[in-house]
Image (cartoon, rainbow, N blue to C red; front, side):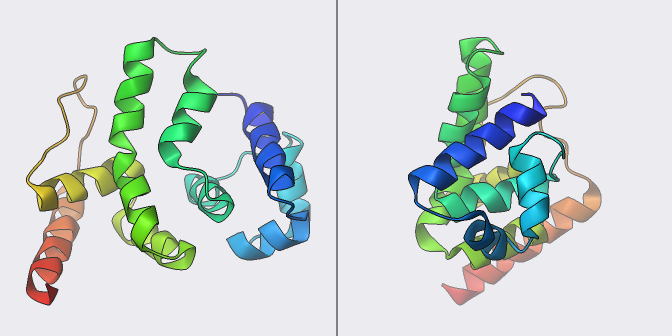
Amino acid sequence: MEVDEFGLYIAKHRKERGLSQVALAEAVGISRPYLTQIENGHRVPSEKVMQSLVVALGIPMAQVVEDLLRDRMPEEQVHSLAYMVRGYDVLAKYLTSGQLREVSEAIGNLEQIDAALGVLAGNPMPPGPEGWLELSDEDRRLIQRMVNRLRTSG
């Protein structure tokens, strides 16, 4: 995906929802000039900002994957990626965008979120290419702590 393609995608969805750049930037916690640079393809947002923009616009991550990658990758890989981010979409149904951002920051990237949800559901991710999902020992401990908290709070 090219930088300007993501920016145009965000601008399109922002306009469809009738949001100003100021409103979206405030919802995400970035400045309006930074959002303008992203939408114009002049800045590459971090993964955190990308996730926050998508969440604030209410776009399911699986849809983002399908929309932006379907012409760049084999269909099987696009579907695998869409499946992988399904955990993020499940969380988005039950959490506010602020809570979802906190979970994302606490766990890390989308693969780690999905892996944590798979452990909770007893439904691990389908196998992918070698190295598809590699967690450090620290990340595994973090996920285990989250699982333990969820088990005791239920």
